[in-house]
Image 1: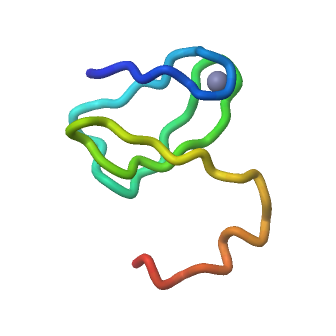
Image 2: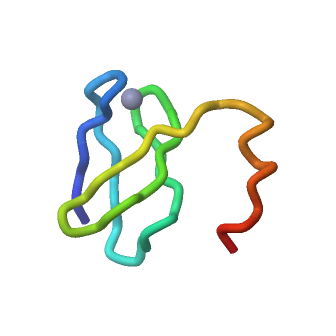
Image 3: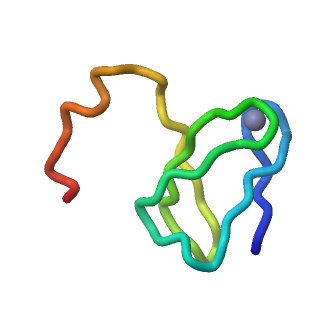
Length: 60
Ligand SMILES: [Zn+2]
């Protein structure tokens, strides 16, 4: 397991071995959601908390 630093609050985001690129992970401290862009090195993209986000369905 790796721990990534949250860009928002500095808390820990736990990334497990069975996580894959495109998975969503959560900050332990502020519970903000991030998408896993890359595993080696770990890169995260903060997801906006917005209902409109889920209109994009072509990532399946
Ligand atoms: Zn956080």
